[in-house]
Image 1 (cartoon, protein in one colour):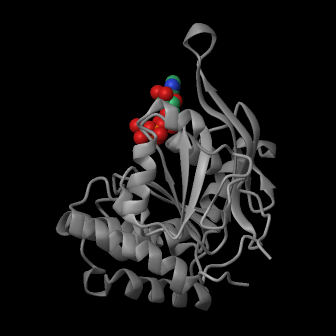
Image 2 (cartoon, protein in one colour; image 1 turned 30 degrees about the vertical axis):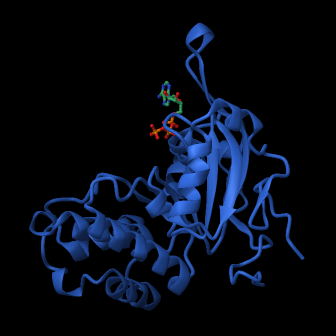
Length: 283
Ligand SMILES: Nc1ncnc2c1ncn2[C@@H]1O[C@H](COP(=O)(O)OP(=O)(O)OP(=O)(O)O)[C@@H](O)[C@H]1O
């Protein structure tokens, strides 16, 4: 089902979601409430950007949603799996098998070729070898445009090319969701644009799910939807973002009055999208 804007409706299942997520760092006088009751879903097959002022909780939300960190209270799900119910071993397996990561630092293995870096997670998981995986990897290599670099090592590539390898590696195991934390932070604007287009293509042409933390309105404009955090709370969602619209929304955070009167997590809507982050669907 698609909406008038051509996007999938909110009835699409969430690939990942957090419910009433609270994360407190430290204790006593020095305690920081990084997440203060956030409920948000990241729909499967869509590209969602997480934005907000510095310190608003973006990275904390991503880390808790991806099982890299644990919530103080509330729940985080990947599909139907509640992360809090998993022991360390199962959580590690879930991260390996069902989640892909792209970070600001490319984190490639310098001694491996591009091809070996891309298939490393699948090799570790013992998932390579079947025809479907080979076909998928082959298609992925074309999407990221690295076919003529497959036998190079990371040091022989530009920063943009290295991040494209990291993107291919993140999608290689066909994870349920790829989380990207400031994936263009180390890139010039042209290389960054390429990586963002790549993430968009993976979502739209290969039916993948991407959740990206960024502070850059131009980067966020590549997403299908932007969720805004402020002071550890979800304050707004914006479908069909443009850089200008995102920038305007961020500027509103600059004044305390706007922050105080900003939309709350329960019912604010932007461009017809529910702000609750749940699966309530427009009919
Ligand atoms: N490990 C930690 N220990 C203590 N406080 C932390 C820790 N990690 C984050 N915080 C605090 O939690 C709050 C949210 O941090 P977080 O990094 O999630 O914000 P952010 O929106 O990603 O910020 P930025 O855009 O600057 O990266 C901040 O006040 C931060 O100082």
